[in-house]
Length: 250
Image (cartoon, rainbow, N blue to C red; front, side, top):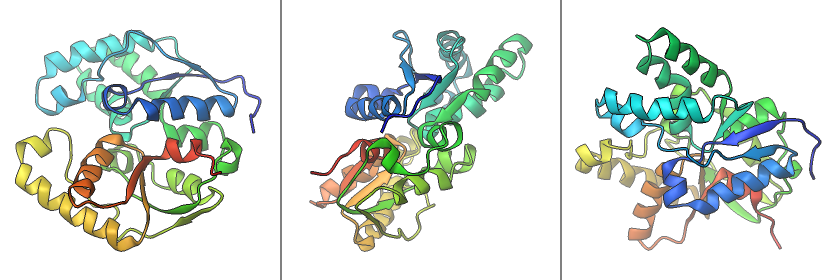
C-alpha cells in the first residue's frame, strides 16, 4: 500500500489531540507513513494560540504564534489534523502579524506549506482512494464538516472523497451537516445554553441519519458531539477521519 514519495511533513498535533486523543495522532502518522511520507514531529511545539486570540488576547496569541513560526520554519510541509488549528496557522496568523512586516512574511511562508490532513492527502499526495491507505471499515458513517475547515480553509470535498472510497463503508446523509455543532472553542463556555441547544439539534440529526459512526476532521467538534451522544446513552461512535483511514476490518 505504501507509495514512493520524497515528501517530508511535520505534524502539528494540536492540543486537543495531544492531551485527550493521542490515538488520533498515531493514526495520522501511520496513514502518512503508509503513503510514503517521512513524518517529523518538532518536540517543542505548543498551542497555536487560537483560544487566546479568539478571546481577544492578541499579545499572548502572538507569543505562542512566534513559537510556532520558529518550530516549523524549515518544514517542507506542515500537516494539521484539525481544520480549526490549520486555519489559525494559515489564515489567522496573517491577521495577527499584519502590522509586523518581518513576521508577516514568516507567517505567509508557513501558510503556503500548511495543510489540513485530508487536504494534504488529496491535494499534495493526490490520494482520492482510501484503499491506498490500506483502509477498510464495515459499517455506516455520516460526516460532520467543522466550521473552520469548511469556511476558513475552504476544504469541503476532500474528506468526503476519502470517506466515500473506504472499502466496506456505507455513507449516510446528515441533515444540516454544515450547521455548527455549538462548540466553537470558547463560545461553548461563554454561551453554554446556546451551545447546548445547537449540539442537541446536531445529535438529533446524527441519530436520524441511521449511521453507526460519526466522522469529522476536528476532535474538538467530535468531543462536543460525542459527549452529548454519550449523555443520551447512544451507541453511535465518533471517529476522526484519520482513524477511519487507519482502520482495517477483520
